Length: 147
Length: 143
Image 1 (cartoon, one colour):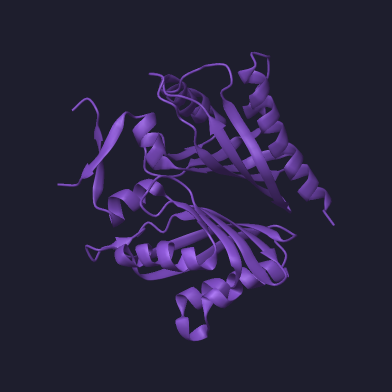
Image 2 (cartoon, chains in turn yellow, blue):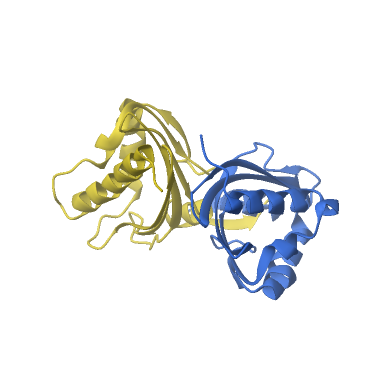
């Protein structure tokens, strides 16, 4: 049986994805409204957009503008959650993405997002994904034997 | 605080057996029809249905580039037969350096049925696999 904190945490994670979908449809919504002002925001891997951002101010001023600059914006793009696995104040969300780079290169990645919810807000967010695909599609790189 | 469930106990047993072969056969904890998926497009990535394919392709291929592999379970959530984990995977790369010396965790989702693991979906740091295990680097297409 699910406890109240589990259902609250899952509802917050679901709201993030539904608000994101609204934005991509052109509606007025802010998926990042579920984040606490001091959220720890982690993008895994070793890409130029990987790292740890502390707080929504840095996310809005640094991470999101850099990410938007790299991404294409076309109808049908989005993040599509497949599974929500929740316990206590934590939720893991398995998702697929459909997107493109700013040059039109397809960028359809697979993700696990982790949300830690405290007092109804996301205190910690982790985005786990195929960072090698990001290097190649978003950062226009290819693989070569290292010298 | 997360709970202890039969599924989580089974996953911890699998990790113990991978880390210490004398603890038992890790394959005995997997269903004959287990499906293992490694996210991405690395040489290790793919969909491996059935124990024979997991052993014969995935594990054998991984052994060629990763020795002394050790797994640490840093988080496990899920109150049912599906458990999402954060795993730290590290080992020795072909150049004798440590793979994942940063000890970054990656996501892994397990499904359990009738006391056996039936599915494992691993989301590793694919750029670390390419760079540290296969000795490749990312070079700009403009160069």
